[in-house]
View 1 (cartoon, rainbow, N blue to C red):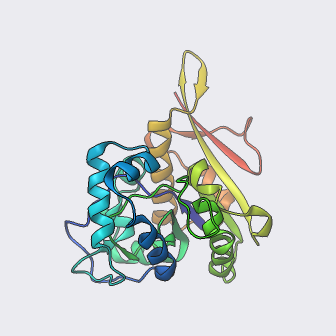
View 2 (cartoon, rainbow, N blue to C red):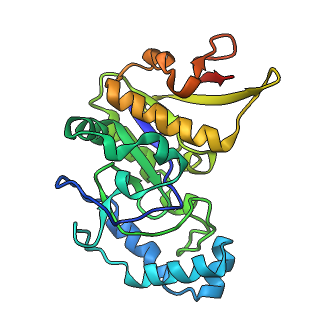
Length: 254
């Protein structure tokens, strides 16, 4: 079983870093994207990415300084680099060595720049949403650029797992890069809904954190069977079997 997460817009390579690390597999592909991004001035990048002037200037500098060299001196493990609600829920900094090793085998982070990342893959600071319409050669956007590469890599990663299930905790924007027709795995998507006056709906800020908490729950409990996901009860959530299906596990919180 493999868990998928989206990256976060907020990230930092400062702070403590464990000695264990791995290298992103698609460095060459990332370099192609960087070379294209280095052609953009701050105003053009601002328009491409629909961000503020400050964020555009920050990322122009990031792209200018980006290098294929990823070491503990200039980069940080992906699972510890990303911040934001999902990663607040994941609490990666509190995972011990055994738990990080388990995550390395069972967790993957989708990325507009790096394609797909293992938790301990070293990354540089960047911002590149998967939905960005960046033109690279014949490709008009990142979905076209990555094609089936990520799906094929997931197949390669899960082939030795006893349970062939992908637990989709990624956003719609990122999961769209996966060609589910070519996946040699079942996909299960947990849905988190908060209730008010008897009406339950997805509140994105809460749902993002819940995705991270679910990933933490899987890692901490070494869950390798999707049937055991229904035991998730962090922060007041509980499984609702009445509206769940084999493909969507719905959790309510009152």
